[in-house]
Length: 305
Ligand code: PSU
Image (cartoon, rainbow, N blue to C red; front, side, top):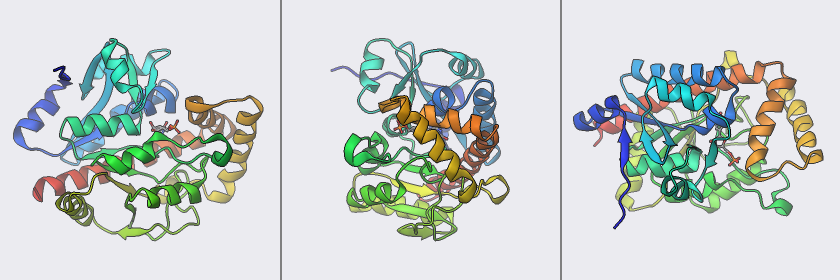
């Protein structure tokens, strides 16, 4: 039988031994979601934020065929500057490890790896979702199906406003994924606090979210929870301001025939250029905010074991 050798960072190894709270982090946001050097600086700040909140960060990536659960500073630096890194999801994670490749993990792949490592909470920016025009293109992120089958609580600032958010919520409902807005009724839209859509569930504390995670396990339900944590007020780009930019970026993607895995990175980069960097500032602040909530949920889960 082939087994997967997980390469733990020293701090994650120690946290596992002590039962300390751990928060998983993805690496696609580093390689495909933000430009260098802000990507590496943000990853380091996110990790520091989690440590300050009393938990241990575990950034996940495949490097030279090794599945890393927690990266050293040098590894983060090298991943953040590497070119042509694969963007790994459920479909290609195993192939990358088997062939000695290097790849960054998306939300879907990070959930799979977190579960393997026994980590119950994962913080990111925004999950992938149902793309606009999916009724023709069939472009639906594998992140959604993963939430339906892998028992990890994912903290995100909702789904990116480049997506079809009503269809994304419909899909999650069909798949039985709990979508929990944190501290408000509306489902947030990444750069904006509200999408104009109500979230199916609302919770106001990390303890409630942890209790719901435990209760799903007690029911024997597969799948995780999506916690939709609105971007802090000070960093938000209101919907009326971001939507025209999103529309322009989408039109450009279509005109240039951008498809499949290239769509999300292309749109994020164009929106960054069109907002003269403001979208990146918002993106960084929302990830930090999600890291803090992720750490609080991990701490509650450690208490409620
Ligand atoms: N959050 C961010 N930036 C990102 C992502 C999340 O702030 O770039 C990445 C995640 O890895 C997520 C991916 O899984 O975007 C979605 O890609 P796609 O739409 O191709 O499934």
